[in-house]
Image (cartoon, rainbow, N blue to C red; front, side):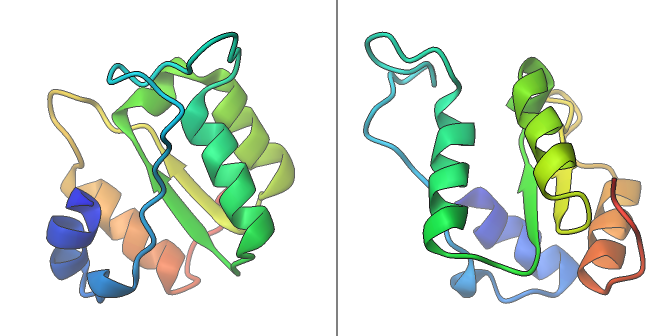
Length: 112
């Protein structure tokens, strides 16, 4: 929800149109309940995209650096439609990251 509230004004997008994906099947730490072997965020995103196909999507998350499966999935299945960035927790998004996001939205950059 912070992306819709703070990032969207910084890059000139209407954040009220953003979908925020959540799950009730996780502990507060983000790990799945029970025997869930995969990351809940990846599973939730896959489910959401299957139910709500989009032309492009952006996934920004400091926890992406912990999940090679998530970045591999995005590269294999959404080469041109996904912008996936593992931001650094201590620094967050850099100005160059914002420029890359804007370029991706405008179709000016190939992400693969």
